[in-house]
Image (cartoon, rainbow, N blue to C red):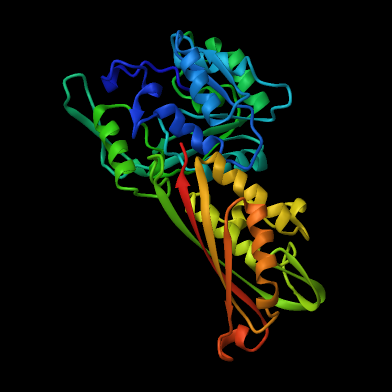
Length: 387
């Protein structure tokens, strides 16, 4: 949703096209959208007359998606977007471009929860200030129990049939008024909607103060969203450990090691690959291997580095970053990495599309690695903001 006029912002430009750190707010919001692992049809609803500008921002993030013109109200703008849904879409996520720092994990969580529960899910934060009810003169008439109140945010996710039906009956549901919240309209249609924990980073840019907050957030590289200036560098650290399993083949650093005991795990147990994934995702603010490639996903049962590393690179690049390099330290008594170090570095670098260097050492008999019970790996990744 990028069709707001942004009058309260006072910039003289529709809000979604106001720049923060030399990038339009819409572009920042799309970083998280295209950082999701899930395949999505993306529809940007733009102010009438700004469709071409919106399409340029959208194409810069990822070509092949749709821009439509919004209407005079949010309700009519959402309806315009819903009219362009592909018939294969099972879950609709409505997200405000004015919340450009909503983390990718929040988008993924509302989708996962909506699909698991079978009804709408919205993120929200508890109110921390005391809330008063006042009359027209400003006099306090009551104190409201804030424990039963929640400040909701976007992204909001709904089963397609729920939100499409709600908007088809919108005028009847709200008595001719215009709904400003999708969850309210879906609830009014008789469908259940639940609240899950939101994220302070998903704040809405509405006033000049909000815009200053956004600029300061970017300038100080605070929070998991990181620095949005092109060329800005970020570092992520990833670790992984696996115990040996004599019943399995050994895959480590993307290579097969004949005659060696394998490593336990849902995939091939390659602790080097997993640590690299964790480091790269962490640097880009995308979580970790467990939340991105969960053990519940059958695609990664027994999977090797060629399944994880190219997908990790895609996720990082969709989030607007380029991987600079990854440095990996392996701790364990076996296998001996030195004879195959160059081969392993070439394999990992080729799959990740960035230089990966390996070093290895023992722990002088200390800990589970020193006792020969498994392998422990620490990786450090450097990424750069690309756009």
